[in-house]
Image (tube, rainbow, N blue to C red):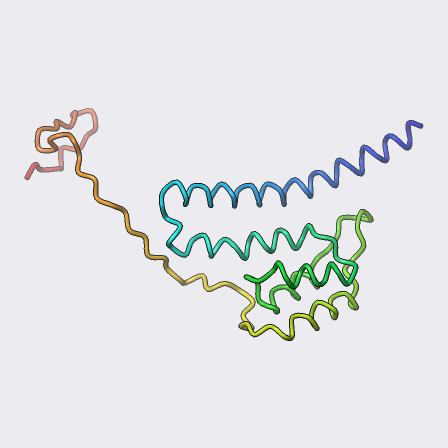
Length: 161
């Protein structure tokens, strides 16, 4: 009885740690999306840029065995290119014996579905892309010309204009 309980405990300990990391990633993405919404920055491309990350995290969690799983991957991973999806599936390494490896036949099923898709063949995101961000100017309610800087700040080299 104790041996079985220990096995179950070990299983859930390892599984929860791995699954917890993916869930934390998804949670952090949703926090970022909420922050963008609160700051009225949804119209900028930041939210769309987070979508491939969210879909990749989902792809790591989803079951990868049946034809219906392949169809669901095809339908849900629209922000990832076919090359990215196949790379994730081929690189996926399950934790110990808790899951089976993704079979080559399953990868071929997904690839067959993705062949009908017309998307780019890029594997990595463009890391050089700069997002345009506009911050509204809010004038200070304090008269800045009247502010005195304490000498303890040791900013004597600054001159008042």
